[in-house]
Amino acid sequence: MTEANNTSADYLVALGKVQRFPRKEIELCMLKNFLSPDECKKLIALIDEKRRPSDIADPNGDDYFRTSETCDLDHTNAFVAEIDAKICGFADIGRRFGEPLQGQRYAVGQEFKAHTDFFDPQGQDFQKYCSVSGQRSWTFMIYLNEPGAGGATRFPHFKKSFVPQTGTMLCWNNRNPDGSVNHWTLHHGMKVRKGTKYVITKWYREKHWPWNG
Image (cartoon, rainbow, N blue to C red; front, side, top):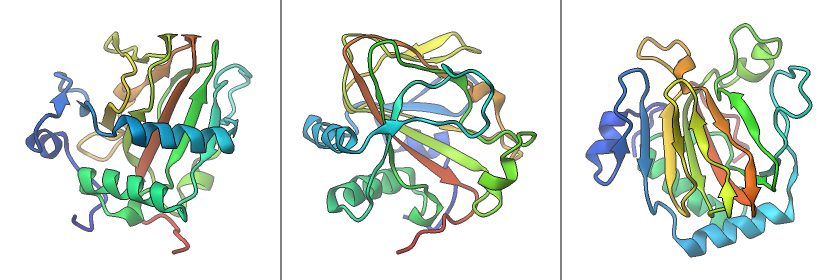
C-alpha cells in the first residue's frame, strides 16, 4: 500500500470485479461481497452496542434531515482495526489519511436526506472540520445487511439508486480532477420501510488525520 491520500476509479476497476458507474461526471464504483456475512454480523453487533443519534456538520434547521443513529467504532478493537486495514489496502490509501470507521443504523422511517460528504467550503463550520486534515477525498461505504424494504442510496442528479446488499461496497471521489468539490456526489440515504439497515463508512482526507497511535 502506498503512502498516498487519493486513489482513482481506474485503479479500483483494474483490481477486478469492481464496477464503475458509467458517467464522466463522477468516479463512483461498486464491489460486491467485499465483506463476508460473518464480518457484517460482527460489525452490526458493535454498532448496536454504542449507537447514538446522528448529527450533521452544518445544521440547516431541518430536525428530520438525518434521523439515523451513529456509532464511532473503537479502533483499539482488533477486529475493527482489521476491517479498517482491509479497506485501506483495497483503496491503496495510507491509513493516516483516513477518519476512524463509523457505523450507521437506520430503523423504519429513518433516513439521511440528500447531502454531500464533502464539507461545504462556504459552510459555517468549514474551518472547524477542515483546518487540520483538509477536505474529504474518497468515501467508502459498505452495506452490512439488507432491510426488508427501502433504504436505498440514491444519487438524485443521475436518478440512480443502489439497493443494499450484504457486504457490498460503494465508493466515490468527493472531488473533481482539479481538486474542487464534486456536487454530482449528492446522495440520499432513503427511508427504511421495513426492517433495519446497517452500514459502515470510511472517509479519507487530503491531509493526515490526528491519530493517537
